[in-house]
Amino acid sequence: MRITVCLTDNRPDPWIEGLRAALPEAEVENWAPGAAPADHAVVWSPPQALLDDQPGLRGMFNIGAGVDALLKLKVPPQTRVVRLDDAGMSVQMAEYVCHFLIRHFREFDAYEAEGRAGRWSYRKPRERKDFTVGVMGLGVLGERVAKAIGQFEFPVNGWSRSAKSIDGLRCFSGESEFDAFLGASRVLVNLLPLTPATRGILNRETLSKLNGGQPGGYLINVARGAHLVDADLIPLLDSGQLAGATLDVFEVEPLPADHPFWRHPKITVTPHGSARTEREASIAQIASKIRAMEQGEPIAGVVDVTRGY
Image (cartoon, rainbow, N blue to C red):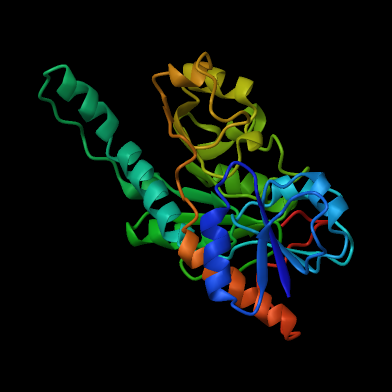
């Protein structure tokens, strides 16, 4: 069995060494044009040249949860695209979302600003029942985030393309229930995969429907920057329709130094760090899936390339 590794903007050596240790029966090498045919590829943002050079791949394993970069490529029909199920990312994502949700709800950002100004002041406590959180996207990460939010006794809604039933969540699904989901949610957490159908889904029209159309909605985007129409966000914040936004992902990364998001007082910017791949756990998961594929066993995380997730 031969495995080729192609990790754009990532050091391949630790992954190669880890895969060799986990799969001693396999030959694992860094990909270069003209390499011998491989059975599987472990990738991050690979070029089309990889697939053109390796048309016989049976499996292509992405080292992250988002596979939108792979869906831009011409993938051979027999190649199964496989994403990570979790590999330590879901607990990080839950920490991140809960932190910024609570920071907004408890107004800790305002306390921080007043503290820097030397002002001692109190704010009237707000009620959780008035801060229903809507989680958009109920895959492995979305479900974990939604359940973590529920532990803090916030009402939680969930929306997904297909119908789901999850304890503790009021679940909405499909286009017919999308507007109702937005209207019933004050804080919106985006965890959708990026597909042609979801590109630009966070826009003036949809974000204005939060909180029943009343001012005070809040956005947390931890999925992909292209979900958000950048030009629509600041007018909503300036008008008070949205109370604020926490953004971890952007259309262009790193976020350009002259981008207005850096300087807007109602926007918190973080550098795409809400959940990072944990290499050892990821290697163990990929190795397990490769072994299962070699034995003809079913595996989780196979992407439907026509749907994009």
